[in-house]
Amino acid sequence: MSDMVHNIKVKVYIADSSKLNNPKLFKSFYDNATAYRKDKVDKIQEQRDKQSALAAGVLLTKALKEAGYDQQTLELKFNNNGKPFFAKHPELDFSLAYSGDRAMCALAVADGPLGAEIGCDVEENTKELAEYLDEYNMTADKWTRLESYAKATQSDMKSLFYGSATVIPGFIFSHPELDDNYKYNICCRTQIPSKNMVIVDLEQM
Image (cartoon, rainbow, N blue to C red; front, side, top):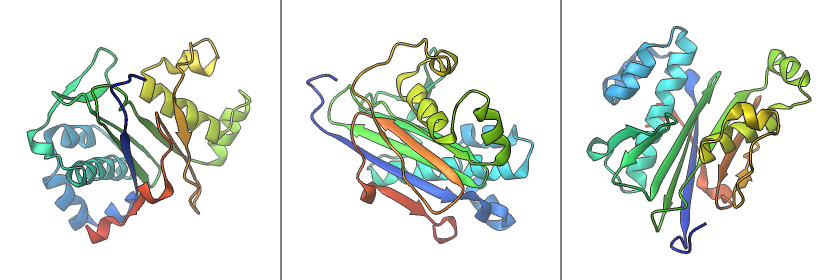
């Protein structure tokens, strides 16, 4: 990590996206979503997945606002690996994830142009997923660790899965343990205190 980075602030937001079963609430969030988020939601077939994808966008808007950024003024671009980023704000990075009825957003703000890399993942711990991962001697916790690391470092998931990728030092994993049937992991360059992992009630926003 660069000496230019002395501090990294990270906050993680998690929400139960099943609350968006309410058509009025769904429409309210959809109508206020960015064009990119609307397009992403529109391309999803299953309503449950639409809800979680929209909820992830809602969490990003909330995270940016609380960090002092106006999302409407941020220019969203994509690098060669397809990772979204905000142009002109190298100190800022974010990661979104959703699975089943959970949506997740992790936001990192560094005090320099390097070090804000972050990735997060959530997986519903279903019987089908467990059986699939068991064939590869893998657990849902290990899978979300790999996925969050891949997002943070822009590594190839296939290479990570088969152990042929080069490991980049300096990254730390945090995994909130919630009383639900989901596994969560966040990968970044700092340990995230529990107070910075927030459960958001979408109905109260």
